[in-house]
Image (cartoon, rainbow, N blue to C red; front, side, top):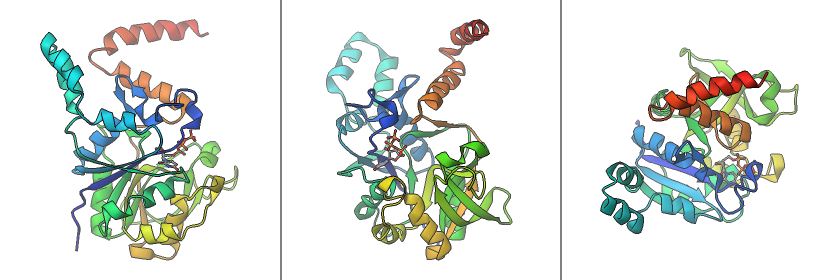
Length: 296
Ligand code: UTP
């Protein structure tokens, strides 16, 4: 029977070493993308797909994450006194965006380990995982499509994107088999960050998953893999090859994605989103053109 999914898990406990020293005392998920922290885009995406119950996996420095989704009484009172309605609405928007829950990971032993920390909260229901540093453009549909596939196939579903074959060593890479749906494939195998030149395809896993609860049992017995971390990719590889709980399918995403955990992609994301903004684009576009002309 199809299950109505309401729970989203957002792992945000990584060390963010690529962004040091910015992430020394602040999670990378709090880095602003234009004027909103990356994590707010991710929570908004979950809510837009009907997932109002959000469990965030946090690590050290969790305070900033919790505070962002809570009231800031003093700040709100000051804005109210000033009659600054727009800013007040902006500040208050994230207070009641979702039903927020938090659990600590303890040591950051890998994405798989972070997801396993959600087992008590999730229980025996399928659930979504959204990586806190991976943004999907709100104008492009991904999560809703994945929820639909999870429900019709009663299996786990991951998101895939075609990447430059020269960059496959930076991603989890899938071996796939076609299905009757143009944008859906069956996963035959998964490898986390394959050695350059050995990848089975250029279909890379991106940070959205809709998983059967059976993944928790598999994760519990998954040994540390690449980088000594417990890898979610390794657990999904087991589920795909042993056909556990319906196996694993992939939805191929062809929309806009922003990887804010990578410095170069982070800069590109901000520029891309800012030029399209009503309040900033008109001034930024001509400046950007002028600046680009000076680069030669
Ligand atoms: P990354 O591998 O991109 O995060 O994990 P990282 O380890 O923080 O980054 P670098 O490489 O050191 O810069 C993808 C997502 O999984 C979370 C991260 O917070 C990020 O959102 N994660 C990763 C955890 O929650 N726990 C972990 O142990 C590892």
